[in-house]
Image (cartoon, rainbow, N blue to C red; front, side):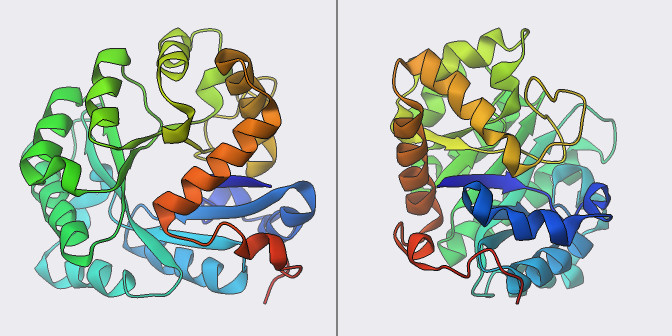
Length: 269
């Protein structure tokens, strides 16, 4: 079975066929998926979906580009969501300098607050970093660095920065970009890194792998990512599936055997 560690099934791109798609995942080889929230509304939708589908779990956090909606009062909604039994991580949180808004001080304030919330609750962290390599690394280290269990989602930097995170025991999230012709830097990172610190992800509906690039992504496209990783690492596709399943269960603190025993995992409640 395949574990998609980072999806956005609450996105409007799935409004027309969400139930049918999620209901088909189990029988098509997807044993688990984690829906990652981006804002307060997304947190509520993530919990709703995780309650409906046994194979679906969730992460609760505010994406850097949505931090403008946060204040002291509604920040408590994030804290409360983390107590839900199917919420397994804080995320996705971090810094995104691709856009001018929200201002960087706002992003940094709430990134730091959410890092310490993760530290307070002892939960793993899903990190987002776009065009903010140095600030992200500095803030993570100042907040405790190796004290966290974390994944660098959709890792887009080079081997040198990958080494910094891998040395802290972090995981790197790898998805469709590994199949892109212009994904040379990520291919170098995957070739360098231990398979035991790699997590499969889609970031769906975004970043569909070749041959679906430019179309809506879903967990069903992960076999193309697995094939590319297996070729780079010189191992079988089955080994990639098995190792990344174990990695994801370890990261999200889920039993590796539980889903295999649940014949109803793909059925809506």
